[in-house]
Length: 168
Image (cartoon, rainbow, N blue to C red):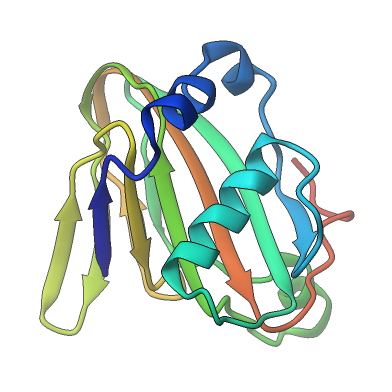
């Protein structure tokens, strides 16, 4: 697990944290490796994965945003190719995943919890904090006690996934 605070420069953060960008939310979307970014979220995916490993190769990236509010969380799960699993029963997992926290509003709770062999690691949702973690492992978001949690997430994939049939 990698945790990097203040991942974005001040100018990048100012643009990334613009609330209007967040309310034009991004559903699960695909970006091919090497593709020129077409929007803010593809810029973020490229920046993150090139920072993580400038020499990486993959097929592409899946990305999305979430805004969660009081009493919400996200139960234990692992990121996977949902459509492939539904169609074939075969589990396909991403190579690695990440979360970049946005401009939370009065947030209390909403920790990222990742299950490891020796227990659960708990990461606080701090604005402009990047967390790279094994999204193919069980993880969840603890209950949000107050406020809103703004999250950009991206997974790196070695196989193309078909997001067009996802039910949002």
